[in-house]
Image (cartoon, rainbow, N blue to C red; front, top):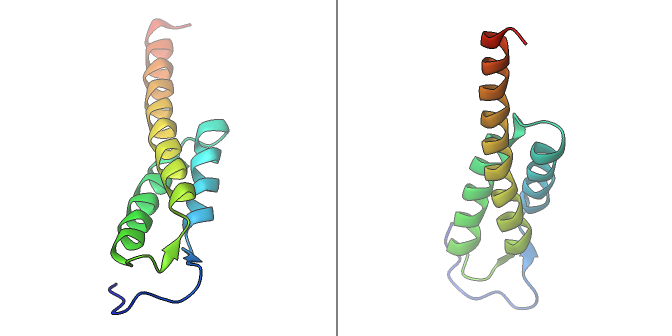
Length: 91
C-alpha cells in the first residue's frame, strides 16, 4: 500500500500491531501453535508499516510480537522433539 503524500498529524496504529503482540505473547506462554501465526502476521504488518511512508504506527508492537512468534515457534518445536524422545524411550 503506497500513500502518495505524507499524512498530517500522528500516525495511525496498524490494525494488526496489537494482535501480533498478543499472539506472540500467547505463543510463548501457553499456546505454541500461535507462534507461526504471529510470525507471518507480524512480517506482513511490518512490510505494510514500512511501505506506508509513516502513515502507520505500531512498529514496536509488531516487532516484539514478531520476535515472540519466532521464539514461540522454536519452543513449540523443541517441546515436540522432547515429547517424541519421551515416547520413544518409554518414559
